Length: 226
Image: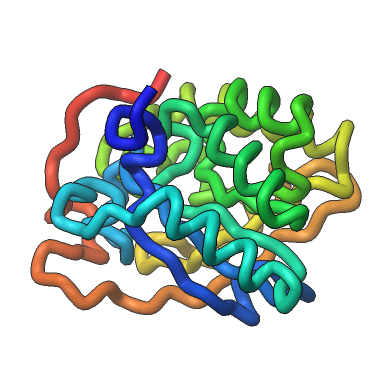
């Protein structure tokens, strides 16, 4: 399998040093393009939906970067887009671990719990930062109609089961986008397993013309998330 036909083709961004993406750790951040949601308030819209507009990062350059920088880092964060949608994700994580010998945190929207479970069981990621968008009934609006309330509940409950069984490997966060009320935030907090706190992130409007805090003005999306 060639680099351009594998999941490595989704590697479209890097932040060499971050002090905030993995709380308590100094890490680098790799961005994988593609997403199964179409959130109208998304900040990484090109990364999520138009990754071909972004330069492809060389697999060899990434490995060279890790060999040279690993000694100054405490970890690697994998974000997107949505990493769980990337084909061959396990291969990417395995090679990053082999080269860097660093722990990996993976960000996810939680809509592919079977991928999260597989990565967890294989030991390919050490921490999962999972977004809780809000109350399940608002997931259609929050995701650009990409996921139903029923599917959101089913997928997130599977993630919460994984977290309850592996509490050291998960934390959860919510961004206070404009359609969420204080009551919505409290509802979302109630979904979490015992012993978990919900990290609240302030909403900052994206700098793009088609970003709408008002979900009635959102862009349409295609397939639903199962």
